[in-house]
Image (cartoon, rainbow, N blue to C red; front, side):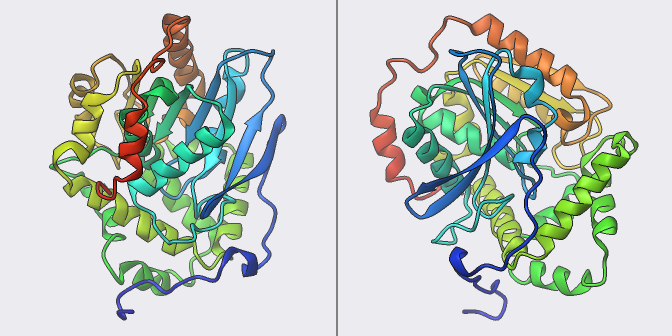
Length: 340
């Protein structure tokens, strides 16, 4: 192993014990065991039986907790679940150490296939937005609708404020940052994350800030936290450089599901200007722009985002996006080794 590469981490069965993950009222956690990965899934009981399923996928450095403000607002229109991607939240690292966009998308697909929940209303933020775009493109049979909140789709001119996050992808940078920030408190780290991700960090309540600090302290005790961050950041950068049919913008054009796009005017990670390009790329799209929102609109403005999702679901009710789709795309996906 090169001295610039991230160190390996111990297997999941010998990882240190850390504090339990927070579970909000009405939520429950379960572990899903799949070949090569174990996923933690956060679920809510729907208001009634028979509601269509929805699955939420978080962004870089996030977890299923990022959806805890939004999901309760949709309990009466969907059976809601949020997944911790491998290496994030309460999910241990993948056995093969693969954190590419393709690997994360494959994890989502395996979960949906194993659970037999598809087609679902699929929702993703940031990294999760890129992941679910790929899922919707290669497995249209699994997706009823697609909602993307500040999706990490390739940008030619990246915002200056997003450069430090992108630098995590470079070999050795994560290790260097770990050493430089060794003395930072969890509170300092959380304030930095909020400043980067929120349009107005002052909107975060004292209770919300306390919960974020507790989660940061928990994550800091895990030996693979920065490995997962750096390798996933590398996966995003790699996906940005891939062209042809595996390019994310090309795959966006292949998405059949009705798509809701949500962009924040104060987003410091995904350019607000990308909203119009995304609206042109996704063939059946609608656009919600929130001038005061940052990178995590579903956490800052959950009511507004929930209203837009409700409208999407109502307008597409009764349609079976993806039904009858050619299942051969699933076989092609299995052999897909590029694209992130």
